Length: 416
Image (cartoon, rainbow, N blue to C red):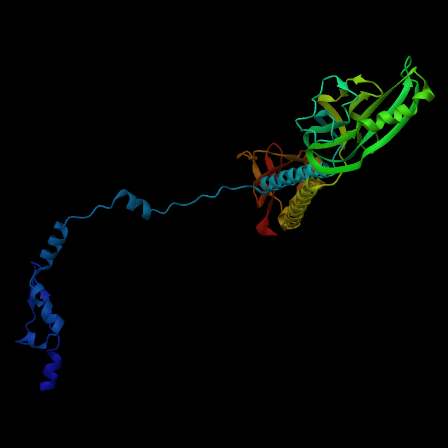
């Protein structure tokens, strides 16, 4: 019996009066606190407040208004994707393919040097400086006489000549040239200098090749010429040609290419004369232009060819994917689209297409037919055209009407 009382007193039953206050159940034990758990005993002091008081206190507490930025974080903005039609996508792809293909062709033409003609401007300048020395000194020796003076044969044993060649192009080009220097001794008729009686050539500098890819060609060469040697050569032939002859020594710088050999600078001095002067000839070609054959393969051509190949491959890939997409869409037509297209194609001369839709007069009686051929029979009997109107993507209507009736055939995807 005691155990039953303990189980029965384990719970405390309460009710609420009209004021919202707790009322202990009469049937509960006299000492309910004895059966409360530790947590329940700790919270018991808060149970004395009525439900109405608790609600009032909750309403009286100030509410926190969230900041605008907090509200913005909680909002869910829907991102609307822009719709691009199938036709527009195909058109964009075709434009990209054409651009890639055209650009690729441009780079191919660049790679193969389209036209193969290149206009290049240039400045070509040569110099010929000399000094006259008694001893075989260097060109810059202070004991040598400078150019532009009168010289004595007795003290002029050696002549130092410095040739310089400089050619500046407007762009980098490949070149392969050479030069050589020759000393030419001539004995000619005094009255007619074109009549050469004796000629001797000494190669002072053998043919020297220069090749590179650059916008400048430059070289120089210093010659130490033994003047007395050439004077002796003329004196040995003096009796043979008589007193009616003259002689000179010309030191020439030649520029050699595959096609020509050109005299670009020279120094000329008389021989067998007690006193003499020296003259020189140089080039000064400024702002000249030449037309070059541009048919050599270089790094730039390789780069153009690589870019053209990449662009061509990209255009072919996009073309392949676009073709597959179009074939899938075209070959993926529904049964409704196939039947509709066949009707419009086979009976094109009998059908009038209503662009903005067509509505039958409400006063007319509408007769629906089950098959399109029945509508053709009505069309032939009434001698009226078939009016086609598209309701939506899966429904179309064909109508033939007279003054009082309208025969209608409805084609729907759901009926197929």
